[in-house]
Length: 120
Image 1: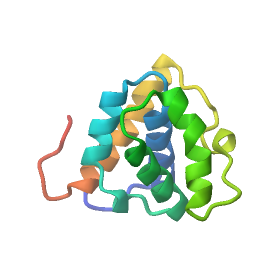
Image 2: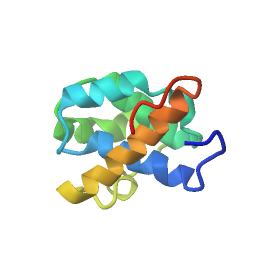
Image 3: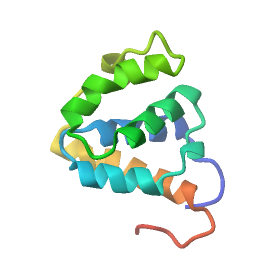
């Protein structure tokens, strides 16, 4: 990846958050990715807050995460947060999860610009 800004940065951020909320990944995987991701890589304030809350919730079940997330994001100053619209389409299929995972990997690369690529 080059050091220039990816053309679809908002899409990368959104896809990464959809990936982190997916029922197709384990809580431990979510926790590890959240540990590696720098919150500052999220340029949009709402997406950064959503990420921070996902990280704070830790390795809980993804269904429970999606139940708790709206109130936590609202409490952080986004009263009109609608998780269904934010994560639409709500469920990612197994084929789509690869694309969402790739977005997370690209943001991980942006979180650690001076390190070797985390994936190939």
